[in-house]
Length: 503
Image (cartoon, rainbow, N blue to C red; front, side, top):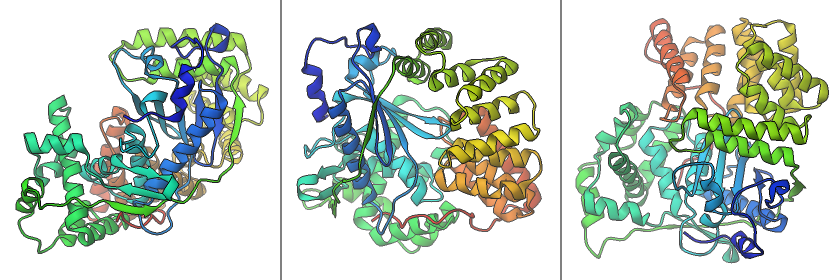
């Protein structure tokens, strides 16, 4: 894995390897905001700004995988720790980074010296993969799992060449290429069934991921026009299997073609795509993080980092961090939001949320927390409506706030009032199953039965192994109900206009 310029800062001075608050002997923390990223890190300010620029450059490079003008909305939250040793404090497994889903979109957690966006041929790894998932949800309305994972793996090998204003896409993913040559691959029919599989072993999972990359690379290289037509149909909301049959009608012996693609000898070529890479010129905003915010970040990491640590151990450590955060600054918004979410008693949550709004009347997240606390306490009165409206007013780009307002109107049987908020949430997070579920509920209540069924089918398409079980059951139960009421056939999904298909 190549090394970011920011890793040089690790070599300067004797510092603790842990991601501590400065008051506990750690490095100062900063937040850098760019147009599409919010980076919180214990890297020095200059290096943190360079990291934000490099993430913007990576995003710009990945967007070149789609033709035409494509610039989806939204901000990705990123936590960058100085190195992998700092990340190890929060997990009992050795990882270089991970992604997590939040109510407002994806969050990336990266170890600074494990990720690079440079002209070095080594691939950028996790952040390219996860950003592709995020961006492709705007480009493709419906995605079978093999396509979603195959595209993400295809773009992991991205190479940025800013000095030439070029990006290279689609070079061989050597670990997956060597895997399929050595161990074989899953058939396309098996990949279509991947969505219905339960938990797979590590070896089985790797074969599915490697096979998805192989099929996508093969289709882009050898059947580019048909593959683009397939994606265009998905962009319009067509049912994936039917769209596939139409796009590849008449093509014979794909299995044999793929075998020749892998084992055809030295005359087989694997073309890559060279695309323009516009320079990044957007301004950055940098501010120091106070001690309370650092402790809140640490609490968040203890709760969300992958690993087999028992939930009670995670919570104990997180609670210690939250307590210290509130000791440092009892009025800090981030720390109080975490305390509200951690409170099990709904009326205690409501008390804390009311107090936070009194302290920070101009904070959108505070009003959103109050609305959620009111809902958890069974209050569906005008007070909750006012809180949700204020949250949306203060943070119009918040998926959580917009979807919460739409859901409130759906629960109180006023779908016409929730339509705009549901549409806004969908434009911000078109691949979010919770947002799609709310959107379908609004449509169903408005009597738009076929559109509701189609939207709920999209929600089911977007479920993955990381989806909470409660949401998974809700989506499938609602889909069964809509199929019973509306009939199994539905019109193409009503969704915001998406970007053109991949090259």
